[in-house]
Amino acid sequence: AVRTPLCRAHKGALAKIPPSTLLSTVLKGCFAKIPSRNISPKDIEDICIGNVLCPVDAVTARMAQLAAGIPYTTPLSTTNRQCSSGLQAVANIANAIRSGQIDIGIGGGFESMSAHPMQKQPMPDVDWDVMQTCKDAMDCLIPMGVTSENVSKKYGLTRKSLDEFASKSHEKAALARDRGLFDDEIIAVGNVRHDDGIRPGTTVEALAKLKPVFDKNGSTTAGNSSQLTDGAAAVLLMTRQEAERRGLPILGVWRSYVVKGVPPAVMGIGPAVAIPAACQMAGLKSLDDVDVFEINEAFASQASWCIDELGIAMEKVNPNGGAIALGHPLGCTGARQIATLLHEMNRRGKRFGVVSMCIGTGAGAAAVIEVEPRQSML
Image (tube, rainbow, N blue to C red; front, side):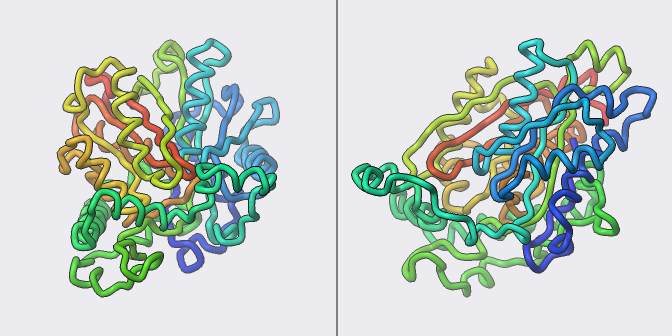
């Protein structure tokens, strides 16, 4: 499970790197730490890649695959489930393996928010006369930042609590970077080796000086929202039998995946609905059985509310920081979270982990991954 560095859109070190290069880098990276005698690119039976903003994502991803040395005999598809696209791509490959369609595959995601900015995305091609008769349908057009304000207002969240959450994200990410905790999951893109959106020393006092972006009396600012980011990530999956036959370490076992719908106007509450369902599907008796949660910090509002609503101990959540500090390259994020989670759990000898995020237009996704102690080796 690998990723590129996550770098600020437009201003960061990857801003001028083509999206195909980001994806090729992590596809190659899936094999970088495995002896070639154990697995070859030609052994990959299917690939699924998540992306949200690239207008010709299927062609871009296919070209990136071939340029990465994975032959044309390996098919590829792309998927778009908004912010959960990278996680959905991994789930699609996991499901194909579980159903017996394939034995080995790669799931991942990529996004260049420099090359394809959100604000330049076209409006949906719909029958507006019909849509305007349905409030929920029209709510799908609410800007994500406004949905953040909706969550804050509905649940009485304070600006100070959101800034405290954001400050902590930067603090944890900066410490993790300084300790080299991201090194095993990152594949360099050229000479770019580190995330560049982390701001060490970010304080609540400094964040308090930023003006709200979506409501002049609101609580959502650029400082307590996820960053616009460029990046890619990929995860190699296979049956247990294949891993053992090839002598490959099993970093983790895919246990469950759930997506649940929520009202579009408060789409950020999705993880609070999806996480319990995923844990139940995995056979966990309680959320207390989960050791590490990777919950996407689309906004401090929704992330902090979901954590509080579920009663999750903060020390279990995003131990190395989240999207407020690291960034949120939409199609990449879910696969990036898996890479971060797996390496963290193996390093610390933890057993159960959850990856979760909210989804634009109203949903939440969550997956449960288990690390088996006897095979928890990187």
